[in-house]
Amino acid sequence: MAGGCLSCFFAYTSVVLLGGRLYDVEASRCDGVIYKKVGDAVELPSCAPTEGVTFPQWKYGFNLIIAEKTVYENNQFKGRLDLNPTSFNLTVRQLTRQDSGVFQFISDVNGTQSETVTINLKVYDPITKEPAVTFVSSWDAEKNSCTVSLTCSSTSDSSVTFSWTVRNETTSGSTMVYNVTPQDGDTGFTCTVSNVVSEKSKSITAKCSNTPESPCFVPLVVGVLCGAALIGLPLLLYLFMRSKGCIDRRSAPQRAHQKDSVTQPEAHEHVYASPLPGDDSIYHSIHGANADRYGDDAPLQPIQLGGLEGTSDYEEPDENSQHNNVNPDPAREVQRRQNK
Image (cartoon, rainbow, N blue to C red; front, side, top):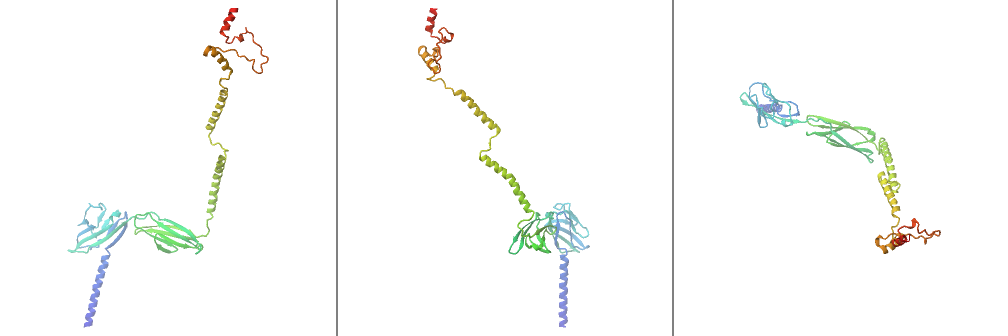
């Protein structure tokens, strides 16, 4: 008897626990988190029975947005809400990031308040651009392989996660360091940036080689050096000749101006090279003698050239010659006229 009661007790307990577990499963079907993208529409389930429901209400946070099938439009969801009159499911259209939050459905079923349904809505911006991938490869002589360092970045404003995929292996994180041997050949790396509503990927290929420079790099270096030589040699030659004075750095107008300025002083030099009359000049001797007798207005006297060298054939001019009457003495002139 005791054993039968004990069996009944365990059976009753199992039924109670099973019933509780079934209730939790039913409740978790409605409660939870819903992820959506900006611009999407979402239908929030009420989990209410189709009959016997009275006083249905939807709340967003602490604000009442629907009560008794009446939609309150004086809120951020104005013009974007639809209520199913049979299931009491709530549809929100044209979602924005500001619509993220907690929604609650409250109702009475057959005169008894039912369990409150709580739904956490999270709205994210979709990822629209591929991630940016950069890498640096360096040769490791000890390991006889290349160490490839990779970095992945995204411009998305939403919270994102990064992952790398290489040879069917996936690792998380925005950076990765991987060893590649020359025997591996071309190795592909794929970075995936994602959030709960979208994802984008970008792939690159890296190749390991212990050659210090690739074949394409040699012609590039040669071309750059040749171009520098073609430009640099003429410039160096010009600077050398200019330093030696072989090149006149002045412009043509400046050279012409200097030529004129040199020619004009030479011409003036011939003019001003003749000495001005001084104390020893013939003019001063003549003028000085007359000045003693007549003052500053004294007439000039005839020049006697007999004492000069090279004048041995000089003849005394005729007294009556017109050439001799150059500034005569006034007293002698008066006497000469009286004698006539």
